[in-house]
Length: 302
Image: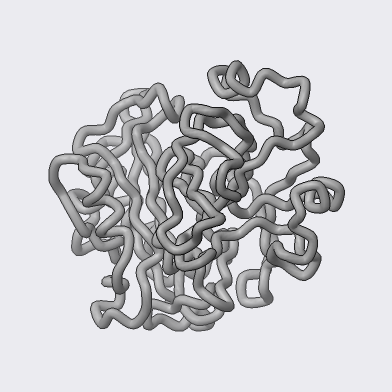
């Protein structure tokens, strides 16, 4: 699952094309709708990301009473304001009035605890309920997206342990990690044509790691498991271009082969695995579809 961080960020402010009294404050590739004149390009403010749960005092201070998501109207989610996607909240809370936000932006200071902000975790539905057992010897993945914790019937139904054993033998590996996502009716609102209530619910592999000669390596799932297990579709290979990434992050899903509904987004990784000083680990990132973020009646479980 992704980690919640509330940080100070340097802003780039854009004109709102459909509202004279609003502007767009950009943080990285995210944009949040703000009041016109509240911020200028190059200034620093606090960015509160989606899925943050805010305390009542902060909600009142920001003038957002009754305007946020959730049964308690306290959760930040992506919305469209006058036709423009707004992801997160840009603000300068009073409690941080004595803080040098420019310095905090450079230091990467996390203000979540000081502001009383927590990460929203959706309740687990009965179809995904069950006892969780610790498995300390398994190879872990990385914090990048909300990986669904599902009863082991998905793994067993698709023969993942057997495929992992065969792969370990081929590679001469002590351990192999096969990372996949489950999907279907009963798992979330986007089904990809699968029924999550059956024994062989939808499942697709997106990553592989292996411990070989004492070192853990990240490997290409497509090269190793094509024909062995269902794989997440590969939508693009080529030079990195942010516009191309955002283009393929949207559209119709390709998992079912029938374009049944919108696409959630994409994960981006280099052709050759490498370390990223930005993430402090693997050079891997994700881009989420705006349509997915703003869909009605959405469900997604961790």
